[in-house]
Image (cartoon, rainbow, N blue to C red; front, side):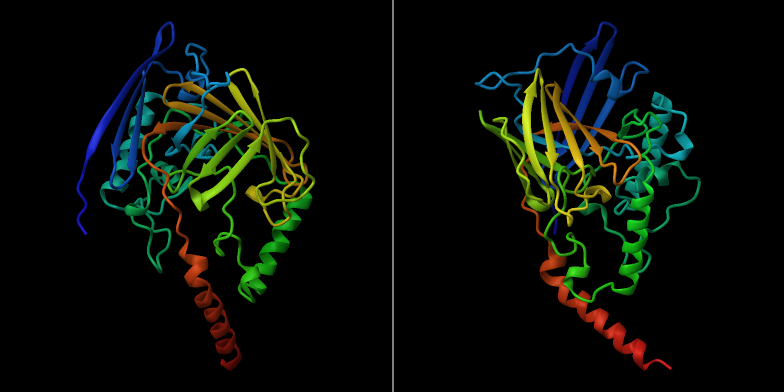
Length: 358
């Protein structure tokens, strides 16, 4: 099926410090919903540090709070954790950034980057080897399913600890992981309950920290609540702002409460369900999010995860969402709706074949 190409560019030039300017160039393709965000920093400073400069005043809602409303895209290729090859670098030089983007463009031009989700894209770009298929049996996702992603000067989304790495697991967490893997090997598909919530199209966790695949969100503010719609799995979080206490009921996305402090919306979430497993955490997870609009087109989203039953220390991720006029699309999940009978049926066939083999 042919699809018409309709590209347009949006430019913004913002003075973020006395001698530093930020030039944003956003290309949009409406039909494929593929966005390339190219950021040129006319300074050696990283984008993460630049947006922290207080030189822009956020607009206000009718009740006087910072206006965070709209649809926001996270299409960054910056890795979650700082790669070992960049262990001593908090930010890339403009030359290093250009080299990596050129390498990524090679994959894209050859339609090879379709399944380089998450950190695999930059890991492949940093490597000296040729492109390696992620799934050599069934094939990769092709580029149709993903938006184009671009790097900025940062070398990790993790900003604390300073080494850009997720802290080590506690001893108890390592035991949980080992037990879960052992059970999964022994009971991969005894029943649908043995499959994860994503396989069953039930839950995909919020907030979403990944990018490039259903990584848009929409924020709606009212005087008493903030609603955040996540495109992945159409997860909606309705967050009270009235100062009411947290409900002591475990929920997949936890129980959130919000408040404004200056230009920032702070959302604290407690009381996760034992089934949630957000990033491997337990129901003891205490999640703190900070949403700050730092330019007309950039929303800084800081996420701090604190679970002493899982990690040896809290850790913080900084996402930079870009404003977009594109719509949020309904998320259609075929795996749980159509593939579950095949998954379970295949497991039963494996059991029969294993019993009949000599």
